[in-house]
Length: 471
Image 1 (cartoon, helix red, strand yellow):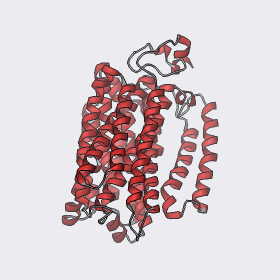
Image 2 (cartoon, one colour):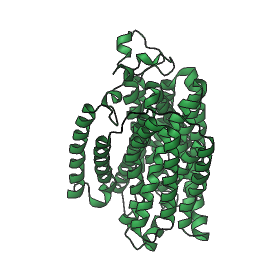
Image 3 (cartoon, rainbow, N blue to C red):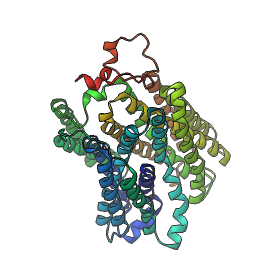
Image 4 (cartoon, rainbow, N blue to C red):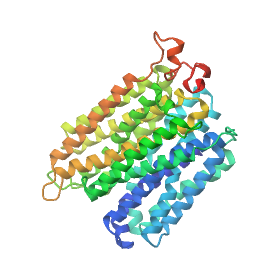
């Protein structure tokens, strides 16, 4: 049931993209206004995910999961019937709260499944994020032609409502930590600097990267982030514990998640645009042809996420992350050198999908293994947030690269080559982070050193040796 909610959320995040021109026309807005339909949900998901994860740790994931799925369903319905852009944005912002299903699902998995099955379930859950985009593109054309663009927004409801019912009936009660509070000051400051930073990032193309609005938001984000960091270091129950973020198994996985998010969304921009670009640069294909290219990658990502759980027990998640980085980087490097035939895009794109499936599963398992069960929600929430931020970077940086190469209004071939090359380089960064992550055995390290670092993902040491238990 948690898996169903996650798939529905990932679908709702991507489903509006094919309908953007129609949204602009029917709601009498500009292209920038219609694009806020995507930005509003992304911002909401970014700021709410760690907060929801924290609430799940405090009050139990089942109760919070039901609320989150209910709010996401209501927001999706509101967006589907919206008579104006303002109502659409409000609905999309509410739907973005559904991003909290990820940390809540990880908490449920860790609480109810035996350790032998946890890694496989976490891996599958992590790969679900890539499963929603491809179906939305495949069915977008027929749905829009036969029923209208609003029916695209009803599609996620078909997963959210059953997910809500099944969660109510089947998800077991998992106790939280009664008596602990919520760091609302930290949550407010965190939301403020994240909104400022992500708004500057997502609007840079339309406003101009050196415009007063973008520079002002970027400066405000830096100041607010600094204030937030000081506040979090002083409160007893911080929303995001800075000491936890310094644990080696956590910060390496978080940085890798940021770059993996870049790798996913950069491909989500480059591959479809290349397929649809006019010849001789591209293939002059349709949106359906671009969607079909994404299907093998989505299937490979899901299967790799399942396989990552078994590999976790055999070789450790550090090795799985290394394999995912190498495979994804190789896929992007291949299409950077050879993208003159569709089969080359299929080969490189499928390698990218399988590699990202391994990488996403590995970073989630590394974080889960590195923290106490009571911190699973907030730790995985931050990891999911950084994946979202990385995705925003992948979208914007790839768009800037393609725009810089434009000839007669269309991106040139050098733009796609550069975009694929930069993304391959980002996966080299993931490989470096994997090498820096904790290994299967703490070779040569004493107990005192282990207390300040992440736990070995496969050693299952007592909780008393974990950093969070030493406070």
